[in-house]
Length: 538
Image 1 (tube, rainbow, N blue to C red):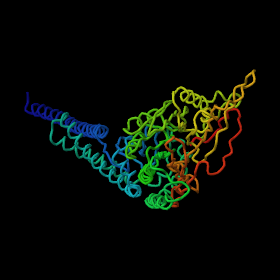
Image 2 (cartoon, rainbow, N blue to C red):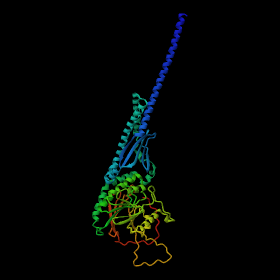
Image 3 (spheres, one colour):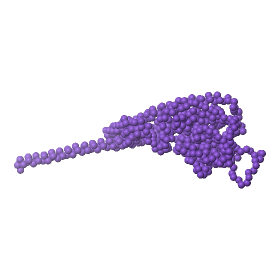
């Protein structure tokens, strides 16, 4: 073999080797970029996954907003926005911001101590309203910082478990910080505060605009009211000082004083006013003829915890806005006596009562009775049931309690006094005497020893809570009404004082003393039992 041939073969081998090396180095370069891309994608996926899991599990905070313990939480979402839950009433949805984060505010729990403070201190109402926006803002900021920290920490923990590499763990933390911080920044920059004026309602809150009325007007009226509430309450004391010496009726030392209230409807001013009248008029017991709350929800049961602050026995019957859970909450109070087709004796007075058979918190009108057959009315049936209980009591009953005046006709001639509420308007009338059952034989002539038939007086109380928020729907607010009843040693009603406060936003106080028998009262002629009218469901 020649030397020339040998060099040719060697050069050919070098070229082949060089090509193989070039091909091998290109493959190595491509493999490195692929691997780095896969690692980066894995880091991003682990970072986002850890941030999402941590946010969903731990991104929540408790904030005190007025009487509520609000729980705020953040969750991933494509559309953003805010949801405010008020179980069991429903929820409202706000188009508050854009971005991948959704804010949920749950107002399920009432803080009993804060609620009692608002009820006891009228000035706390206005301060709570002023601080509510700041409380929510501070809560959202605190929740945002917490969410950012939890997202980064969750991403670090998850990447440490998967990669076991310090550089990759650090990269995951930085990625989670950028993604979460960017999402919070997008929500903050697209914030729309005016969205609260246009919420979307779900559940029972669909009826909220019709029931409550214009929210801005109510807020304005309530602001004026809270400023004058202390003056309203103090005026009651000054008023009593003026009229207590009236010569028309001077209560004896053994007089029993009963305070009749009704339809408090969650009013924050009602129990403060009741306590003032109880102390000033030396009340022996309070009678409440129902509608303590508005919706009968579990969230409203805390309102009954103010009953013990009255300091005297509190006799109560259920209204059409009071549910079974509200009745249970009232019965738990140490000074409360719940009458549901029962009879009790307080300070020598025998009192019977029955709850409203209808529960209609979300309707504008109480279902009308069957015009063709009034006996089918649940209201009349409940009144007849109470009348049977009174007859079977074995002793005279002095007062019968119902919520709706439409329940009263069967009690005519059975008790001398029926107390009711429901209509949010004060009214005192005499019930028509019951019509005797038809008989074939002539009725016997009354003997000298026969007792005269019982004349039944029906006293319908106004709203002691000014109808709650419902009282703010009209230009003229619903007055706050309550009455003091005076009974002598023979358990007979001798006089009553009607007290009326001007209503939400007004500070005028009126009181009228009425002496039973001072003026002739026309006794209605006997008639068939009246058909209950279709009254608004207050």
